[in-house]
Image 1 (cartoon, rainbow, N blue to C red):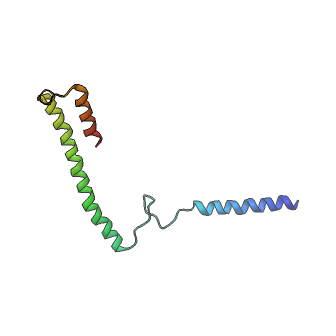
Image 2 (image 1 turned 30 degrees about the vertical axis):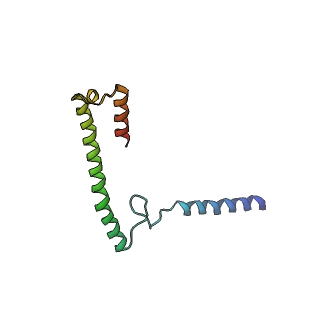
Image 3 (image 1 turned 45 degrees about the vertical axis):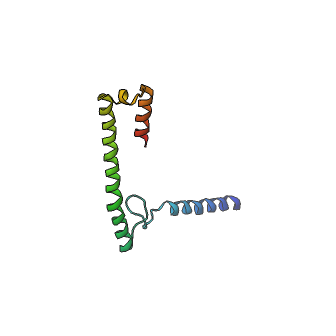
Length: 99
């Protein structure tokens, strides 16, 4: 009988530990990341956002323009002028799209 009681006590204590691990922490924000507490960190993140995001947007826009430009250049006879075969042109386009 004492073994059964000891096993039940162990199970009860383990379920308590599991519940403690599942409780949400108060140090995280809505997305699960660590909440920003200091004003310096908030200013730094905002400053980096204002620098990085416009740069990424401009890079994306130039990539879009390049993809359209190479298509128009093929229609204007770029393959003939450069002596490219169809496979070589497709290789160039693949490199442009990837990188």
